[in-house]
Image 1 (cartoon, rainbow, N blue to C red):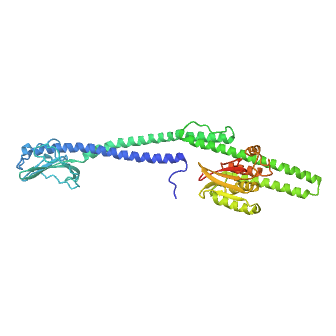
Image 2: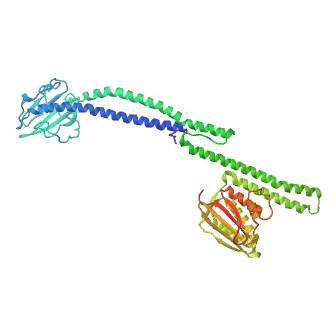
Length: 456
């Protein structure tokens, strides 16, 4: 398929503006030509109507024609001039001297629109003359004006004719400078258009240079003050720069956490190998599992950080019930009673695996420390879904809750529920959410997980 518009923005603007200018100039030329034709034609009609007024005085009320009252004004008195008139009465005719006794050739063209009735310019005139177009006896294009005057013996018809060349000659003479003026105007508009495009698109070149400066590290953000139409785009670019910086900080944090998390197991393995005690294999196996967990966790965070993670709209209630049923079977010997109060229509915007990991870690902690009851609820607050998990276990001290509410390395407090909560918090923050702990009214720990709800 042929491309109509070029790929470049300047090319598209140039093509569309050029087409618009050409169409506008053509329409303007046609309109001006029509106005000039009407103006010249009105002059011809007025001249013919004046002759009709003069010769209509020769028509008596009884339809008789008085030749002495029919006056020929130049050029109607010159034979071959193309100007002529004729009065056709009920009983006789009068002709202009230019006809030299011959009848006026009747119009053979299509009649123009009739004029409405107007004021009486002559006592016998009942309607204004109407235009007709045709050809004279020599085949020359001729413009006619015809008036009908009622008499006692019937209507009398007055015809006046003039050459259309009197209209066409000045039109041709006027159209040459007109078309030249239109051509010059089009050239001027074309030059103005090119200049306008260069000036108008210059801010895009400046913006490109600012982005190049950010990429090269010379500046941190893009700073432009005009034009105002580009300011929203600049704001989005700066937001993207900030988001990329945060992603880079998180990536560096993942590397640091991974290195720090592997440091201790490696040191222990080194000591165990040096000592070669009897339980070395069991200890090595434990440390290897710990290292494998650290690697698996940080690889998962790296996947979630790519391009903001793969998110979807997920119904919350079915996943909560599936996890609750699974943990009820795992901890079947403890007879934990789950209480779930979640609207079945609530949705969260989150990666499916990350949601299962967050809920799985938090539910597992609740089931481990609960005495008899785990309560799970959720509600929509603005565009956030707040998921609350409470247990009736022994709970935690306020200092410990404060420590867990403070961001820290994932290997800190790796035992117990510290690592699971830290992983859940990091996943929630990657999705634009949050995680907060406090004392539950059931006596144990209350965890509030906030995730985006609905469409992003």
